[in-house]
Image (cartoon, rainbow, N blue to C red):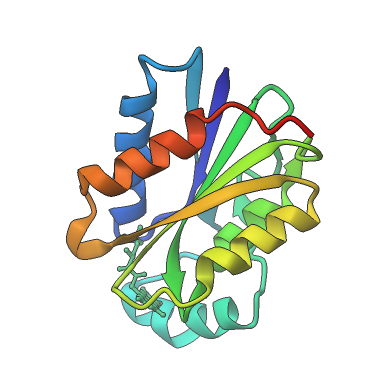
Length: 166
Ligand SMILES: Cc1cc2nc3c(=O)[nH]c(=O)nc-3n(C[C@H](O)[C@H](O)[C@H](O)COP(=O)(O)O)c2cc1C
């Protein structure tokens, strides 16, 4: 089984979870690739709140690097996003728009937040479903417990679960 972990991170929390997950998966799967998505608009913390958060709230998709994310070679695709204004980031929306080969793929979502994610994970999950992915579930990491063993174990279990039969 091959896994892609596609993530966006401004201040490092989501990257940390992505890296920990890749480490946990290493002995369990055939290969894991980390795909970090960068917003071509470079935000400072201030501009992220001033302009990034409203864009996130509106569900806008940013231009990103890489411009295309081909997931054909993977069995499970994991998407990790910070929560901005109770929503996935514009870069994460851009990553969903940039997907190719997502039709019929099994997908898992994780979000990191300051404690108030509201429906950010559901919004990302439904965007992935619209691209044809089958979303297994989502895990939320509060930034105060970014290295939580319990949350990480939940995430590993979702990723390594056998595919659904239908
Ligand atoms: C622009 C902006 C908006 C945010 N909005 C929320 C929010 O609506 N709810 C919340 O719980 N945390 C919010 N946060 C906190 C981040 O979700 C949290 O710090 C996250 O772990 C950051 O991930 P990162 O370090 O990978 O960038 C926001 C942070 C930023 C920069």
